[in-house]
Amino acid sequence: MHIRSPRDHCVPTTICSWIPAGALLLLAACTTPPPEPLAPRDLAREVAIRADTPREVLLAALALHDAPPLGLALPADLDPKRDADRDVFWHAHAVAFAPVVRASRRAWRAVQIDEGAAGNPDRPGLMYRMEDGGEPDRQNDVRATVDLLGLLGLGPKAAERELAAEVTGLAHGKLEEAVWSAAFAVDRARVRLAAARQFHASLEQHLISARAGLRRIRMLQERGRLGEGLVSRAQAVLASLETDLSFLARDVARAREALAHAAGVPAHATAIETLHDDLIDREITLPLHVPKATELLVSVPTLRSRQLAYAVAEARLRAAAAEWWPRLQIGPHFKIRPDELLSGGVVSLDLPWPATVEANIDAAVERRTQAREAVVDALAAAVASVETRRDELRYALEHRTHHARRLDVESARAWRAARARLEVLEGADVVDTWIDALQLRAKGALAPTGAARHVLLTDLAYREIAGKLPGLDAGPAAPGRGAGAGGSP
Image 1: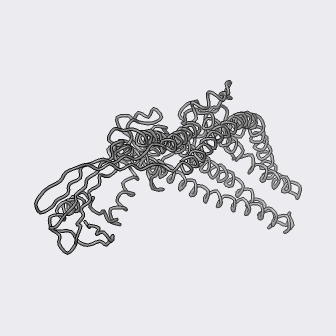
Image 2 (image 1 turned 180 degrees about the vertical axis):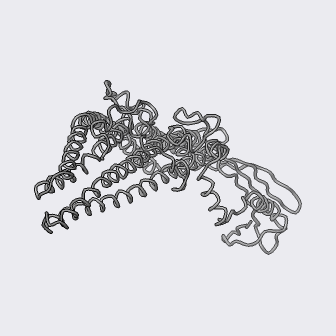
Image 3 (image 1 turned 180 degrees about the horizontal axis):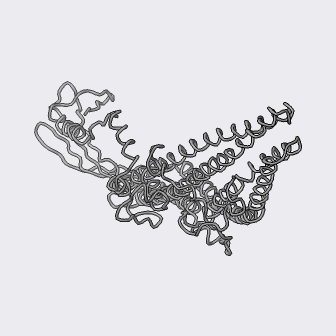
């Protein structure tokens, strides 16, 4: 603590004046949280335990929320081998461990704490002054002041509390938005991994029969029935498909990594390894009702967050207008002399500068208008997007039902015929037909999986923009999948 001489020169106070300052310093030292250095071994252990997350760890992570979001209700136990295809399993992990949710959750809890400190009075003031530094006992002044309007909760402090409450509401809206986004992200990652595995399995099965046909072609070459160019062409086409198979294996690894990131678990987690490939075999129907603008404002977390941001801008405007209130500090004043003690009072009035307050209000009005326009723009985009996503879903359903299925059935029929001819006939035209059918069947074998993946991803995109709940549990398996092909052989 320091005193200020008539020449505004700071000099140390007497020992008695140091007592309050020392107590405050001791209090600050005692209430400072201890440091928590990062320990690599502990960090690695936190990551490793997520591979087969115990229910207790999952519940502890979810307990950081006041209530389970999205209607999440955990079963008595969660078995990664049994529940790897259940929405509740993956959504629980996304809510507990997805980085975007963890960051939003901490931000929300921090502003909740900030709200508790908002609107409190300004710091009380204490001033100790000596009239003459050469003779400290000659005369001393002690003054203490408090924020009167702050104690009464009037003016700027009331506006500060209102603003803090709106900021907390916005942070909660951002948390809800993060949970919503994380749940859909983990659903999309599940679809992509299941599809990548089916792509790889379908092409691998097709190549088994293709390799058998290539052996027949080489045998015909050895007999002198075929020219070298035609055989080389057949080998090149098969090598190209083998390359595609290796790329599909890479896609499986990347899809596994993407799901690990979305769920916040290691890529070697049991649930990822045991995820069923038939996850994407869901029957999706075209929604009959498209939400209206008023419905979207209520159901879509992103739009709710924009409305909460507008409420914050409104509260900031009220806080700017509250600056018209003066700052009023009052308190006792003691003048200490060698032979007497005089007491009195101190009143400090801090008046606003009109031009500054008016400028701040005008700027806050512009920011409120900006926030309102952001809500309108986001709503307009959502209305357009929900219509577009529904149209895309209709096209995807039509493609899956008609085009992809027809390609699968007809390419399988052509492939069976080409293989049968190659088994009993000889000649360049037979091999030409076999090569064409080989390439056509490679596309046909992947078509059902590609169409099913597109349908599911489009349905998820529609539901996310329309404010419908995430999840893949609802809906039976798609009928007739692969029935026309009967497998690649």
